[in-house]
Image (cartoon, rainbow over all chains, first blue to last red; front, top):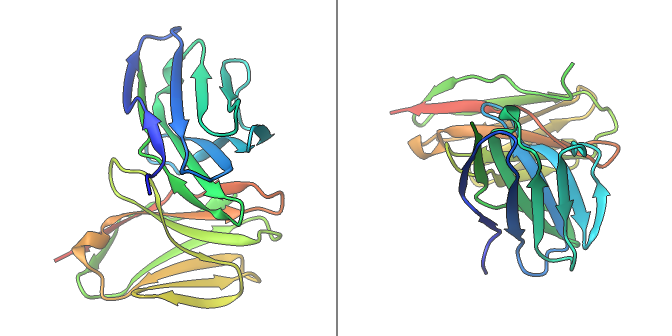
Length: 114
Length: 110
């Protein structure tokens, strides 16, 4: 069974540029999470989807961040415009409805904003 | 006060000894408790979860939960160099939010 797939793995951009991250969860997992992890910190939840519905986006900085999961499968997280402080690892995770609290993480996208 | 607190370490333990990792949480209504292992440059992977007070054992790992003291711990018996990693404690709060601690760096010295 394939794991959670994320792309790109690395991204370097200049501040004020837009950037997008893509995630494909484990097949059959209807819950998808986006996290941000800063160096030396634990992951911080940005948004959680149940199928195509965003059920928790309270931590998403909505002035510059947006996310979508149109068909309830893969998802895109966008930042526009990026700021220096957005440099971090962006992790996607998924879980199934019958074991929702067991999350499987993707490899992450390491973002560097210059 | 942070919602989930862990000592950042590093915690240095000799090979073969027991490593003890601790975590405290602030939300008394928290329901579920998790331990993740994260190797440097890698993503977190779930080691164990525990819901009820007491101990839960899985191989060399034992999770301990004390809801009255708002305390959860992870014991690693017969520590191996491959156990060297950062261990993240995560808690599902009463609002069903998943909150991670900052992690404890564990180093197993041969």
